[in-house]
Image (tube, rainbow, N blue to C red; front, side, top):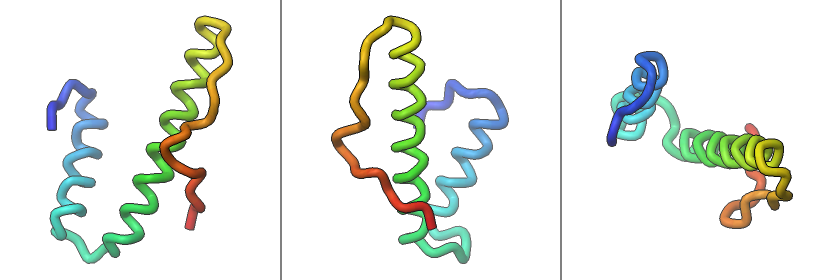
Length: 70
């Protein structure tokens, strides 16, 4: 993974990477659901920002359904 983030964001990604590698007692299925939700949320925020910046309409991410937050 390439790191071009702030120290705080980089540390968060490193902790998530550790969790994905099984260095935690967390449930992998739950981690995947939470990451899917965060990805959808990030795309939604990015599209909204782009819409404000250039005046275009952006559809919700078509590659994933709105995940349920558990």
